[in-house]
Amino acid sequence: MRGRIFTFMPFEVGDIVEGTVLNITDFGAFIKLPEGKTGLVHISEVANTYVKNIRDFLKENDRVKVKILSMEPNGKISLSIKKAMPQKTPKEKDFAWQNSRNNNNSSFEEKLLKFLKDSDERQQQLRKHLDSKRRNTSYRRSNGY
Image (cartoon, rainbow, N blue to C red):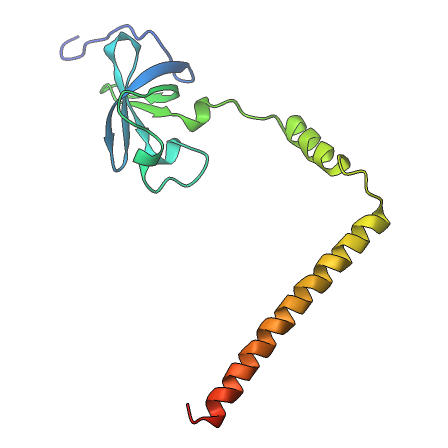
């Protein structure tokens, strides 16, 4: 076998390992992994939210946990920070939503009264705003503006 060198890799696709941010580019960050290997976290794999500027999320020499997405024969290693984060199970999400809904011990009537009061206050503010706009418009028309 000439031309190909097979090396032992201490990790596999799917493993979560800790690494250090070596370099940051506009498209991602290069991470130094154990055993001296280097991988790339693409900007889309940095966080669960939209990342416009990767430097808002990472700095050089930051320690990060990454999940290995792929390892190419040419040595390229694709990584993800967001997939290395613990994910909530659907049951945990449902439970959190139910608890937040049940924490308020108000009756339906109390909630309805609060809604009507808030709605009435917003309507009054909107009317005042529209009335002031109408007055300003009529003032401009009468003075030739």
